[in-house]
Image 1 (cartoon, rainbow, N blue to C red):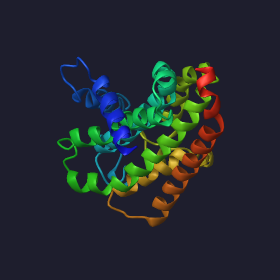
Image 2 (image 1 turned 135 degrees about the vertical axis):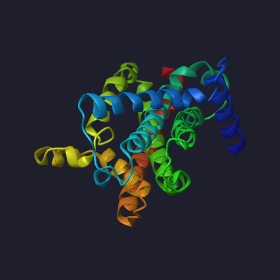
Image 3 (image 1 turned 30 degrees about the vertical axis):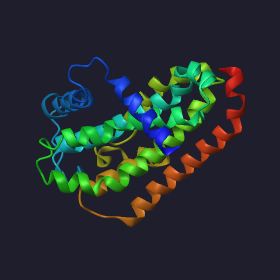
Image 4 (image 1 turned 120 degrees about the vertical axis):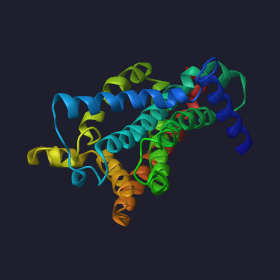
Amino acid sequence: MLKLILQSIKRDFKYSFAGSAFGTIWLFLSPLFQTLVFYYIFEHIIKVRFPKEVTANMPYSAYLIIGIAFWTGFVQAIYRGANSLLDNRNLIKKVPIPPYIYILSSCTVGFLYTPMVLLYSIPLLKFESVRVIVSLLPVIFAWYILALGIALLLASLTVYLRDLSQMLGPLFNFLFYTVPIVYPYSLIPEGLKMLVGINPLFYMIEAVYLQASGFIDPRAIFICYTISLVFFLMGVLVYRRLNIGFYDVL
């Protein structure tokens, strides 16, 4: 089964960059462009200077690229995973492979954006870049488990509710601005901080910045993995409940 999963991941990865002259560099260019846009807006148009104390003891540019790297991989993993069963419907009917293999491989390839963007960002993360990336490894895995759980959940539902995938784009855009990625948490008005605290992704991104700053907080890591495992178990349960009818609906 492991060999089958690895082959499926390899196939999806090659298909994602087939015919591309720059290959995996495209993984980095989009997040880099986003970082440059937000950096220019805050630093040169709005003229807001964030002290390092509120940006996890790092320059604002590094704060941005790290947050956007995690968000990009998270979104790509869920979007690809959620649509994987519909995209591979012909193979699912013809090849006796468990449908979750397609979800797993698509989600994994999508999530590769996060580590690849971080690796390509090493020249930009001038401050102890290797230490920062190594310290982020525990939370990278937690974000992957979270993305996989949500992908299992959405992929199972999308088979029956085809319009669900069309709602992901606007939903992700909304969620992006409710999580302190392009702005520090301290900038949020006191009256809204309680609402932000309801969002599980807030605790996920908080763990990222704590790790990147060099402050190891076991409580933050515990919360991060608890959230990830809860969503993963939800995804598994929904998949097991609904996969019986996949072959009839697809």
